[in-house]
Length: 252
Image 1 (tube, one colour):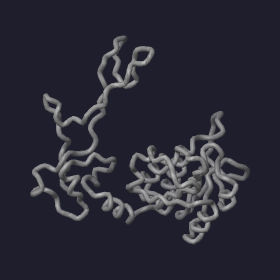
Image 2 (cartoon, rainbow, N blue to C red):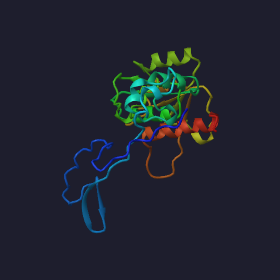
Image 3 (tube, rainbow, N blue to C red):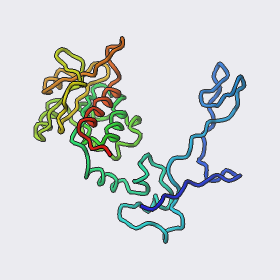
Image 4 (spheres, rainbow, N blue to C red):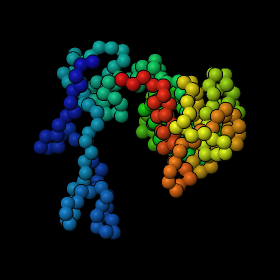
């Protein structure tokens, strides 16, 4: 792939800089969390995040690279998406098709009994580790904000209840590996995870339901050493997925 053009640099009039929202009001202490401060002085200077991505491909349409995976709209207007540089200017469909050729053998399932806000974070992590699919068990609707648009590139399926999901997993030959702290669970750190499996997580507040836990062939937990009984389910999912990566993924 040719070198990507650099994002446009602002001139003296501010051209090339994305619109910046007005700075938030100053709090009761007199300092806004989004403003910069130096020594004991407070500056009304918003912290500008660096522009993400690349601008339009330089030279116009006659200079555009050739290939069906390129998106003419992105080539014309620039690509500011949260994707690897390798995928700059690719259409969403082309990116998904490329990811599908090398997805890993693990899936992730999360129960959604009370609109758990952690699902978005789990989907984002699943995308980063190239999970086969993410399965939402229970309510269909979930908060996509934490996914940071990664759900556009990650297959996410819905299952109305634990039994239907368990039947689907069995039909695919995928064992269900529960991640929960309960009697009889084994330390994740000492476990060998199957190359093809579903890592199952429960609701943030209550853990895996009895109905879904009964369908799992093994229960693992993450070893902890502090005073808290459990860690956030989004963090736990990231730890478990990375444990699979350490055992099975091809690195480098």
